[in-house]
Length: 188
Image (cartoon, rainbow, N blue to C red; front, top):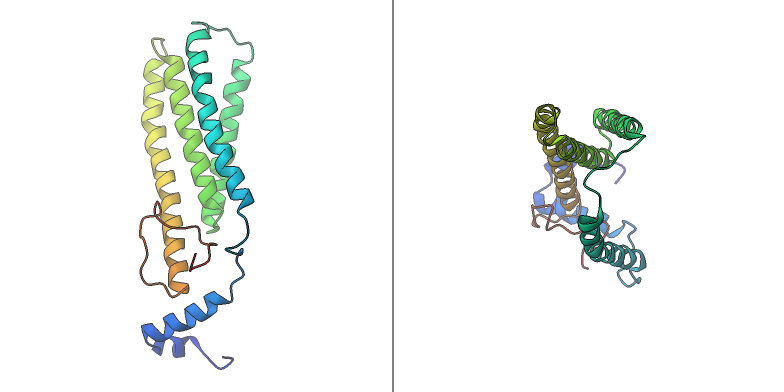
């Protein structure tokens, strides 16, 4: 294939390109389908156990927390949170500018931090003089969070579609919510 040029490949039929893509896909190193999924099992158990364990904890907190609470380091908490948000947005912006795949994670983390910031701002300012400012801030943060999360989902969807094309798979779920992890063997 030394002599094969881009123009040659473009001249091939879709079926010929798909056959070559499938052949190349067979050469990709992937985890064995027979290997025990120890990390996947661990993460699955960890997430479900964590969710279940939080149910009684939420019940306990809802009945035991004081109605008011004084915190000495409140400014450190909020300034630190906003510093983390600013750093996350800056790094994510850089990754997006550089067209790096890791930007998906930055987009999701930034979206999560924005949603958390809106939640805490509104909840903690409710029935105070800062309520209007918190609501206005949330009116900016929540749509921005939706845009960032939606962008991450679109990047993931495009990456998956390109990977399927390179594998020679013309059909497959378009929704990222139905797609398998890319490293899973094709026949698994």
